[in-house]
Length: 349
Image (cartoon, rainbow, N blue to C red):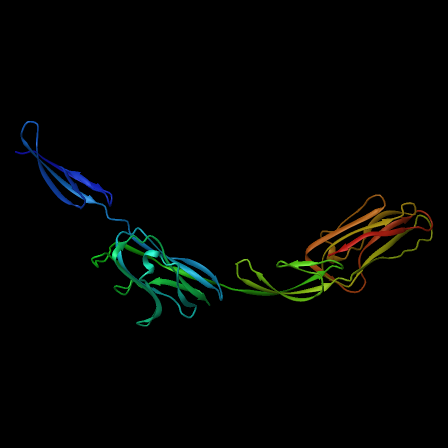
């Protein structure tokens, strides 16, 4: 009998296979007869498979947009070869998106593409159609769909209606192995808020890139963390706060005296820094007492070379009305007369 050899081969899409002097580019069964060195015939059978092309994938973008903004949703295509026609139909919510046109059309499509929106068979859609007798490789961005955003909306290819989403070759045959990936528009909310801040005497306050030196109410157009507009009503209040060191009288050397430190008329107080000098020849520092509960947390005090230093801060601002005692300083009287020489520095914020 004539010897028979059976071969099975698979090659990538777009490549060819050489068999018995032939260049094969299609899947199928092939056979040839060879003559061996002995002069006898030998038959070789080939089962050849050319792998399918990768799927043609059409993708709609996932886009965030602020309410009232006009956004662009990309429509992209990959793995195409020899396309002569396309038809796309995309469902969307007309209550939340207003279609305003297409932009950045791929040059190969620009001369004859049609893109419009309407209600087709009871379904609100954007439709795109294109045809050219000269096949094109349409990879990358096909075009952007532009919408005005009033709410969120899914963007879904209409795969339920035959012919609404397909690609064709130059013979008008449908190109197989296509995939369609839906998209979405997520609406982001604009925001508004009202804040009140102190304006230090002789100082300034900066917000949203603007600096203010005068008390009053201002409307600011800022950008929120989500990238959308944020309207802020800012009220700046002049700080006319009074901090006062009280008086105390000692009858004799060795007496203990308590001196109140008071504050008047302050709102949204978040920090205190003060340095109070005293005459070390006349009095000696003993301790402090009576810290107001509103500043008891994070209250710091020390005594250095005739100066009492105080600091306090809190992320939660506090308010004080007329003549409120912040804390008391306790001293021993050393000699008659003397005492405070001056308040070196007082800052409230």
